[in-house]
Image 1 (cartoon, rainbow, N blue to C red):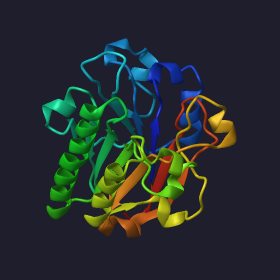
Image 2 (spheres, helix red, strand yellow; image 1 turned 30 degrees about the horizontal axis):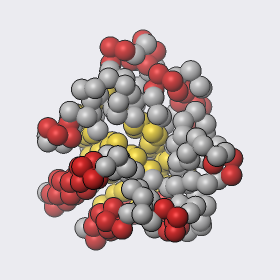
Image 3 (spheres, rainbow, N blue to C red; image 1 turned 180 degrees about the horizontal axis):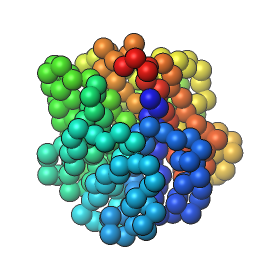
Length: 256
């Protein structure tokens, strides 16, 4: 089973940039997208009903902002919009789908760059999410957390760490939040297979950053430790265009 996650930076825009052809070619079993920037009633029929997939959408109150969607070939056992916490759920940041062997959290994590209020909102989101997913694991569930985490964890995860250490997305307190997930037993799947530098999933549109590979790795699949043996591959797909992010993926064992 192959799972992909992609911040598309506007699903209506990317639908005009080869999105459907990419889905046909890759044929993911599950696709999580973030920053859809659309309400369901704003979508074309071909986006509302992608052939071969069950689709689920969670949009924010404000149009043109945030939003996530999950497309899956297998019908989930259960679907939940949001974490059940109003201050996050009104921004349309989380979709939870339950399958036989795991819970999948598709998340567009907050960005803390605007001001201290939004940075605190982001930090609170990390704390509250960790509490929720830790409880799920303790209850016997396997948990996959996919999405745009909006933080580069280690210096290897961005091109210019020293220049960005005082900016949101690489602040010590944000990186410490990812440490908290690791300390709680969650594993960054990409680093199970790839120790090499210069592998990024987001590039600013400015300064020819993508062409020069001046990027950040901020899109992840994290899983609880007991799932690690079932992850047989993880990757970043830098060649896929259409957004300022590129897709990331994991592959689960057929025996899982």
